[in-house]
Length: 436
Image 1 (cartoon, rainbow, N blue to C red):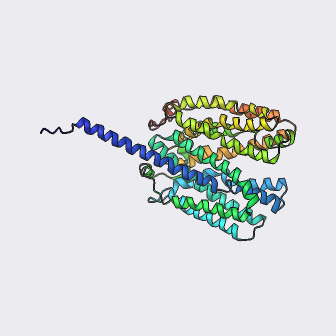
Image 2 (cartoon, one colour):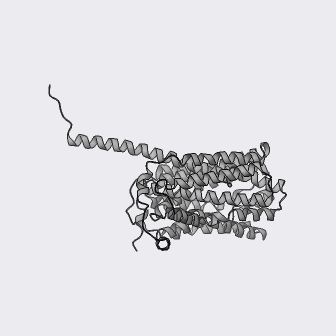
Image 3 (cartoon, one colour):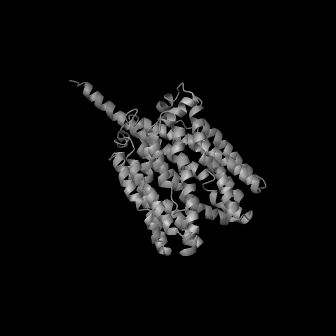
């Protein structure tokens, strides 16, 4: 009986099949890892499930005026505006064995401890402000480490598009759950109970730090470099692809017509109830998810350059829909359209930011282009919009919002073409975007 031995071609084909299967398993592990991490970070932070109960406690428990409440929130958000500092700390100081997971573990335990302290002690204004400030700062450090780890893995394995979808889900899913659960907690649980729940969610982050992601091994081996802090900052400043991405994300989040102006427009002019406004807020975040998921499907089929243009054209229409809110039904329609028009663009811009980060400075770059740009644009737009609205100019606030989004079109032209020429799953050429 003659036995046919496998040829070298058959062996290569079998190896390719095994490699593809391993790659598929690795990608699912990566998606699951960062989905769990981002949702836990979103829910556990003071801006997550505890946000609404804290606001009501300040208003009803401590009897703060609107101005005092605004000052409290502004002080508490200072670490977010300076997020790039936390990113730089992450980039410069990490252990060889634990890498980014050291920050996940240490900072999560510190945040959980602060929550437990709040839950088991008497709380006054200054104590609450100090502890919330510390928890926000610790969570910004967690966020810097999580974003940097995700960006490094995404670049190493050509997954910036799919992980931008995971990032968006990790932001909007907690926003929806926090809006729905926050109101329930105000009615059915004490603020101390809320802090205990937030501490429990934070422990999930600490537990996940013991999960060493296999896909990060290649990325972590490339992190060690003999570079001074000054040289690193100079390299960041000279990294050409980062700044158009940061400018685009700033313009996208600079929305004078939303936030406080929209709140007063809907509650004073349209006269919707507080319950309907809560629903409006939740639906805005909820309906980001379908078009974010659509981006996940298309990013592996079309180059990022095309997706950026598609997303921006649709995003420009997000501003004028604010004029449609004239009653309860139309207000709900505006919330739905707001989310649908914004999800695709948000995922595309996060994809761009991930591709634009320099190697070894993922933490600083992500915090500059994403977190700090988001916080600065949001606060600046809200202040400007409130000033315009106070003079009876809601229409002008909407117009400025639309114009800011339209300016993204010119910013798209300044992106290095080779950086956005590939679709997700294709390796980006090393140094893409650095050539003049």
